[in-house]
Length: 280
Image (cartoon, rainbow, N blue to C red; front, side, top):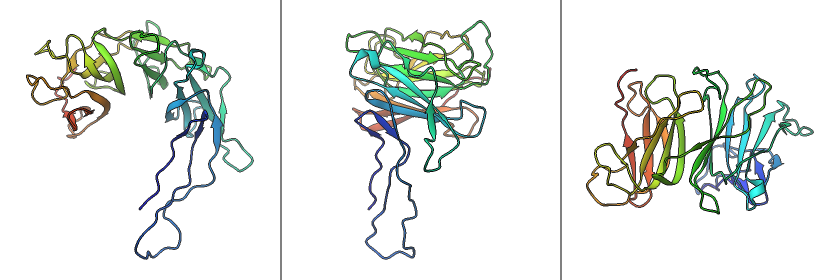
C-alpha cells in the first residue's frame, strides 16, 4: 500500500516535492523505499492555486520553470504566477524565484493551464520558438462566457498581458484543455472538453447537445478558426449525456498524427478519437 502525494496546499502555496512512502505486507530486499524525497520546498502563490504547468520556458537553460493558475476567491487575485528556476536547489537556496512582472492578472478565474508555442501576437504567422502560457477560464462568478487566455512570451523573458480568445457560444462548461498540432501543419490546436454544448456539436448531427470536443485551430497570429465539435460517444443518435470532462492528446496508433482521448463523466467511459486528418 502506498501513501498518496499532496499536490497543493489550500493556504495559497505550491510544493514541488512531498515525502512519499510505500508500506509492504511482505519483506522486501531493500531497507529504504525505492522512491523518496527531501523536505518540501514551498513557495507562496495567490489564493487557491488550481494547477501548475512545468516546462523549460525561461532562461534558455535545461532547468524547468513553473507557471501556476490561481483560481482565487476574490476577483482581484485571478492570476497566473510565474517562477523561474534558479538552478540552485541547495538547502540555503529558494530554487525558484518569481519573475518581476508576475503575477499576471486575469479577468476570469482560471482552472487549467498548459504551455505551447502559440506563435506571436502579431501578423507573423510562424511559431517563434518560445513556449507561451495558455489558460482555460470556463466561467466566472458573474456568468460570463468561457474564454481562453494566451500570455505570449516576450523577448525579455517575461510575458505579455493576457490575450483573450472568446470561446464559441455553443461551448459551455469547458473543463479539459489540451494543446497540440493535430494535422501537422505547424498550427497549434486548442482542444477543449465541453460538458455541454447548446448548438453545433458534430458536423453530421447539429442537434446533439450533451457535450463534445471543441477544436480551435490556431493561426499563429492570436486568432482561431470557428471550432467544429466532435462526439465522445460511439452512437451520436443515442440521446445520452457523456459530458466529457478532461482531454489529452498523443499518437495512440503511432501513425504520426496526434489523437484525442477524453473522459466521459456521465457514461463512466473514456473515448479515443483516432485522428484521420488529411496531409496538409
